[in-house]
Length: 502
Image 1 (spheres, rainbow, N blue to C red):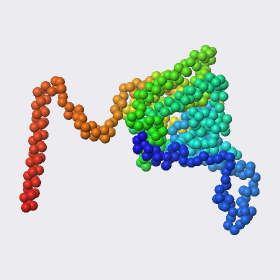
Image 2 (cartoon, helix red, strand yellow):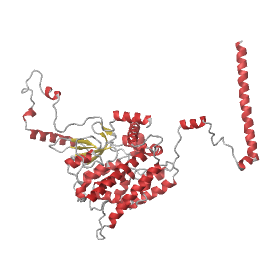
Image 3 (cartoon, rainbow, N blue to C red):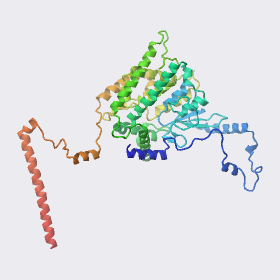
Image 4 (cartoon, one colour):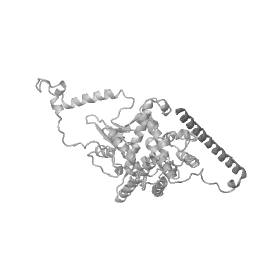
């Protein structure tokens, strides 16, 4: 592994707690009262009875109600709707958002310009402030004492919702047989251990894509988000210090993710992008065949689309697959690969329209929090369908947010598959830059005596051209005269200096 990757990841772990491992797990059974709690409750020179406050004489239930009223009065000043559950994200937390929507749990989504939190580590994190209960703060990768029903996802937010909110999507979808459970686990493992790793490799290991696309997204997310009334166009007007902070955060997260990836930084074991795309293509083909099998088993009279395992309601594997597709559609490599699978794109669109589509305010009384969440997702700097080349800016800017496109498809009469086909056509015509050779490698080639293309002899008709030969002779003669003149002038100057000194 490269030394720079290890150093940067160590700095990221110390400053940002990106690995979520800085603290020890707290016990949920017993709690020892701190000395400041007992000593601080006694006044100087007063007994414990004299130092009791007015709140000590109020019953616990009334005290809790008073605290809840004060909290509500403070929360009313915020611009977003007030709900018990809030999900804070840096990059869109599609898995957690879709999980909450399928489970029909109202929640608020807020963008953050920080990549991590001291208490929970890498974002996203969820806060649950249910009245009359202790507040809960849990991160996606935060160690906890919660019992996970599935070790494949390894998601603490999912574990909390399963244990404390009774979220069970497999039971809700009707997965009862052992065969269905085994098939669900197999696809979960494929998505989490194969496709997600390929996505991270393509995002952080491709230097050209990182320099041209992803780093700018991190800078935009670090400077624009959480600033009301500011859009991506105001990025150039922001303070240079915020941009520097965004670059630093981008470098730290990239180093951390590269350290986690298997084989990253190893010169002899690195995996090329083409090999990764071949593996991703095989996985997408298997998922596409499964969707086709589920559609063939569907009754012709039933117009409702079946999900991955042939169920009428989405299971946990469907949420995991949809979240991956939402990320892959914003990847410069996988977005072109997905253009060859219209069934997967249609599956993604139908899933999105059902749970993220525009709601009717006359029918849905809780439409305000959905509109707020949709607006937060649209404002997120990571939600773009980018292209690698920057040679033709008008064509690149024509690709709008994938999510924005689907939300307004009823007005624009445009389908996501058409946009993906256009993106694939443009990407195939683009001149993707060749990987740059480091200066150390160029110096090594020069030291080993390798001649450049300019020094190599020209063969064929060019060498037999008399005009070209005359030009080469004149150029060589001029060079020799110029060098001789410089040497003569230098010798005369040295003699004059020595003569004046004597």
